[in-house]
Image 1 (cartoon, rainbow, N blue to C red):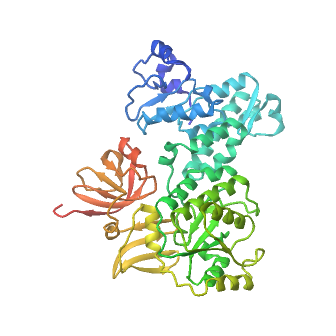
Image 2: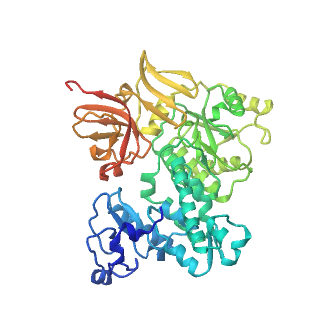
Amino acid sequence: AATDTTRLYPALCSRSGSNIPALEDPEFVSLFLVRDGEQPVPLHIHAPFPIQPGETVITPNWHTLLSRPRDFCQFLDGLKASVPPDTCWYLPGAALPENAAILVHAGFDLFDYIATDLATAQGRFCLPDGQYPESVMGDGLCSCQGCMTGDLLLHNRAALDQELARIRRRIRDGTFREFLDGRCRTKPEYVSIMRHIEQSDRMEQNTPVSRTTPFFATSGDSIHRVEVRRFIDRLVDRYIPPVCDVAVLIPCSAKKPYSLSQSHRKFSQAIGRRAHELIITSPLGLVPRDIELCYPAAAYDVPVTGYWDHEERHLITKALVRYFTRHPYRRVLAHLDGDARIIAQEAADQAGFEIEFTGDTDRLTDPASLQALHEALDGERKVKSHLVRGMISFQFGYDLKAPNLEVKGSYPEQVVKRGRTLLFSTVPSHGLIRPTFDGWSLIETGYRVYIDNFVPQGDILAPGVIDADPVIRPGDEVLVIGDKAMATGRAVMGADEMIRSSRGIAVRVRKVKKLDGQ
């Protein structure tokens, strides 16, 4: 939100010695920075200060770093790490309609009208796509009350308020990151800041593992998003493929999950379970059939042009090389066309294995092409599919070797049982596998949240969390363990935020089980 912050914090009207530029040297800061004990508490990279949970901090002159994206992100990450997560961050004199989205993405919460009022004094008309001369007010670019009455000050403030309202709506809907993709293009430095933030550990720790909304990969920057990097890293470092020494690379489809598409039904029929099916796609690189539900594999959408740019090809090739180096196969077939065919060959050359191409490169689903794929697999044994092991290894980083499991239900909504005991269920809307208490008993380590000595009566709040597995991210399925009760649910916060926050919901509880004697 943007507001008159001097009414919220009267100390701003009288304090001095806190408006020190971020790049001032430590000696200058130590001599002149004054902290009066009032809110908001001034922060500076060269003057660490203990902040209490729930306080408001102010970062004066931070707007001067907008033209230095690397410093902006590195300094901010350092400050964020030293301050409790449930802190309100006030950025004075910086917010404009054109930069509000990138400032919120960076982690700021509270703004004022100083920058918009300065723009008014300079005769600039502010919109989300940039600034115009005051003379355009009558051109119909906006129909707010300020434009109707010729009040530039009112228009500029209203434009900021409207932009922040859009951001709040997008955050609630889970579509803010896609919104940011378009908004940050107004200036090169905003794009640079976005790219630096995407590479930070702070952003990875706070990015949900899944969303119920589509993942739109609409720009070249999409391939660097946290969700994409996380998917590829988990594919290489965690995922355990079925026991099989033959793999077939096939193209992606517009319909998700892939198995429901007409083309993939034809591919699978031709393959006849005689090879491990691997889907090559941008921006995710490689999606094994048995984890095609895992977010964002079943939720992404890309503009289809048939053209993959150089960076896409490089990063996807790198992903394939990493996967095949870790998981070598006796045979690798490629039923591909276009750039995907070139990428597969480049990956084979770099990883040092032979690749066999099948089918007509222009008509992969034609009977002749499918027949060629079918015949290429003559004599190969059928693969024992293990949907549960693959998904659990990817999601929880655990190798589940439990025997006698049965997968039942209509794909993609399936359940996993042992006899009559329900162990796991798939949740297509989230792309996750959901364990019951019995299911958690098979996953012996990881994704635990430890709580104080109480029986949850609803969701778990952050003050009740004693400890949490560091790998937990927002949206993860977790097992909550306490002296008096256990619970299953989904994390709302990452592990670091759960532990360091003094307020807010840490885990949305689905089911509670009291322990013996309670």
